[in-house]
Amino acid sequence: MGKTKGMTVQLPPQLWLSCRAIANETRLRLIGLIFQEQKLSVKELATITGITEQNASNQLRTLRIQGLITPYRKKQQVFYKAIANSEVKYAEEILRVLQNYHGRNTPSHAIIREATGLTHPRRIEIIKEIGNTPMTQGELIEITGMTTSAMARHIVKLQARGFINRSEKKYSLGAPKECLSRLLINLVRV
Image (cartoon, rainbow, N blue to C red; front, side, top):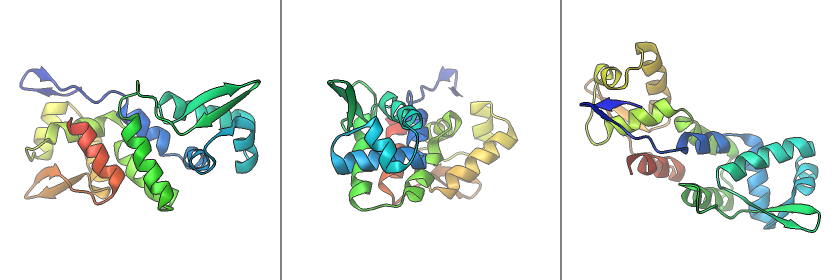
């Protein structure tokens, strides 16, 4: 967590983990199949995707933990539906964007590129610190306590994905065109 004039900046809980969960080809394929078929079992998902049931189960667990799918039992089988867990912060908004992308046949590599912008808590911290006030790299380093090399790596990734822009040696929040990126910036700023 960063410090601003003696105050600790609160990071959105679990947002970077949600981004990590959806920044995965297999998990995006599984959730896409669930969107398409409404409900599927682990066995059905494993068969369709050509992965083992154990792998499918592990990937589904990650999506479930992040609140993006909901399991339910029918006799001996567990089925999954694309219903957000209301107790998981941001799950509903992220699931809505993923459903929109699925409906538009957005390639998974495009979704992964957006999601990987915030798959690290330090990148979220940078976005949070910049807020509405453009800052230099030095100011960001001082506030966050990151090393110069770590800051540079995170800035490169954030800039490449449109989360931040640089003008006159100061970084400010970007205005990405993609739905998921816009949502993520808004979730960080809340």
